[in-house]
Length: 119
Image (cartoon, one colour):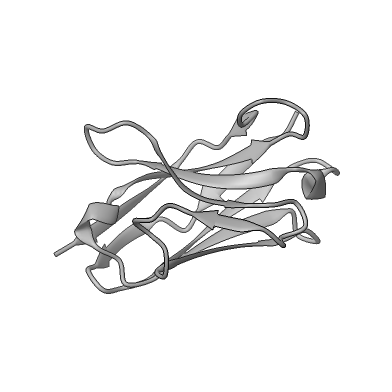
């Protein structure tokens, strides 16, 4: 069982930056690929970014490429999402998720953190 706790959300003006953190419990953090997702108001949850266990492979949604950076510190059991040049359409609840090897989909989810970008 892995517990995930996000932090770092808040309010920011358009063009600003925020860094989200997701702290994970457990001793096998490096074996999990980690993902960031978001759910805008009134919309379905959508993929934002993913990073492999060792950090060598990263993927991003087209809407955030060039603005968001996913990274991880396996020594701290933490994954980050650095968000820059934020837009009002980035407003959402952001979730981190852990993808256990050899099982389909993401297995564990955090509780989410709100990001609000004002114009």
